[in-house]
Image (cartoon, rainbow, N blue to C red):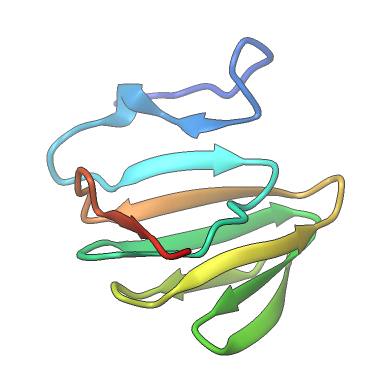
Length: 106
């Protein structure tokens, strides 16, 4: 068993590096989405909204996510967060974990 704890010593955004193991996705957390248009070459990005709401744009579609929602952004899909509530929090999985997979689009 492996446990990663999110406590006050952690930043408000980051990755659970202690969970880095073969066969597991990269697992992160944040209290806001990245406001930067980008896509991933190989990784699926799975967002699990725990609290609050946010607005995300994937390709040409804008949608609002609420607590309990899950969205899967597929490799190659251009995406960015546009806004979020002050109480927003999500977990994010990169499947498979891939180094230098993110491509920023100006």
